[in-house]
Image (cartoon, rainbow, N blue to C red; front, side, top):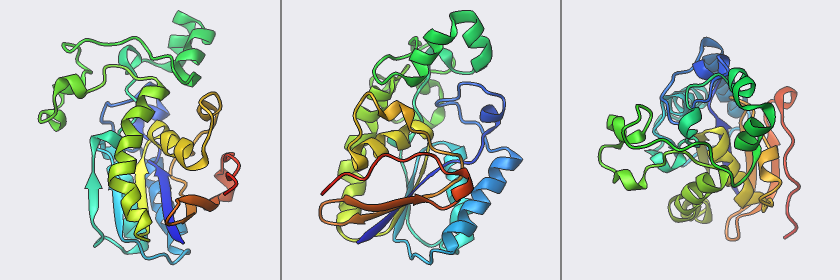
Length: 243
């Protein structure tokens, strides 16, 4: 048996302002820092020795990981940062207030953009200020590979090959891992691990800064058990698939 912890970053500044964030590199709020520190304290009670950690290129996830590792006093473990674990790119919605966007485009259209599996938001072109090629973090990446507006389906197609090639081998080698990422990149992992249907996966949400502890059978990566460590802030989880 191996342990995998999935933690969504603590509350970010644009979470608090109810704005579409995506790939914009906003920081944690003071409450987000508290959530991340609490994540570390909750995880410390589990007394798990971790072998490695993975996170995105975005500071809200990286800082959450730092604070979590501080809480469990395991700063020494190797940390891999990769853009494939970034949040979904919200394209032309990026930076917009969600309520104002509902008033402009209608709540039904915004719901489709946010909660459908395969409908992407309006795309942005390479000259747009929020195109990833404008960010120095992505200068070494072919702009053609960088998203300009993603559905959850496209996010899943970005995240899951990385998980299978770079993360799953650690789990199959019985390594305990932490992944600090984002609501939609973590949805992709939830879909894979729990075998969730395309139509159902948009309905599952990750609370900020609340570690999800998953026990896996290492050779098959079948889920044995799963629970949020802060039960008071837990969200619904998919049923554990039968082996």
